[in-house]
Length: 392
Image (cartoon, rainbow, N blue to C red):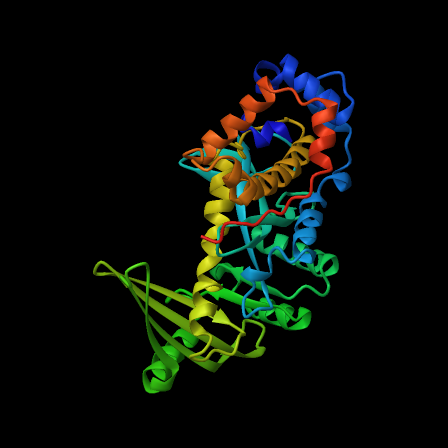
């Protein structure tokens, strides 16, 4: 966990940067160990750990936050938690790594890689907590096509419903999932959704929306936002648009569009949704719903790839062991977000750290140089505190 919390970047750095006398004393106080384990020892332990022992930990922690009402302020319409689903690449190799590798050939060069589909609970203040992961890999030797994000979603969705059967969920999905199967699945599970809709997708739906939205002036709203109201948003919506999918099944879809203009630049956002939209909720639905899908890309994947966690680093050549490291990374990322946005840190360090990288470095130096005694641990553990989180 410290490997990721302190943004060390590789197992080798555990050995070179964390195995100090002070850190060993703190580990002895907290865990009863003789000191800080060698990086190879950590890998050997992860090799023996069952995936079932670690893959559910992020979901358990997030569920604790939900039950403690920490995440209540970030619900859509005071009810639904926004779950963004998207895939990303983890480790990749120039030669075949294992039998389950996916392959991609460009310009005569083949890359062997392992992607994963993530379901993350995202919030307006930038939280991105992993709820569930589904690795995309070729496990069926008789398959004629590679595994893909779509197939991974069909495996992950039932697991998510089983794990959180009563959680009010709103999915935030990209245009890949604009299909009849997803509409039916969401209706079956009682899930709401926002699915990105591009002008070139579902042409009949786009054409009917363009026609209907121009005629229904009552389904339009103009809004200004930003610190100085510098951003103009023009919302339009239409309901019960008829659509027949590839399996000849009929659906009635709702479409919401937001044209956002800032500094003479206009950007179009459009979604399919099963929310009933009106002038009283369209701003919240778009800005706190559909627009927040970017959080999984930025605060989720980009943070873990370039923000010190080194998601694409092969922490182990053994795929099962790498997955253990992956789930530990998701857990550490959740804890680090709580640390960074918590009022306890701001109270103790009112001047801040300048960046999340500096926060990780400061945490590393605290472990390296500041030993925690049993007396201090007792004092800390018996002190009642309350932590609030940054809403900005």
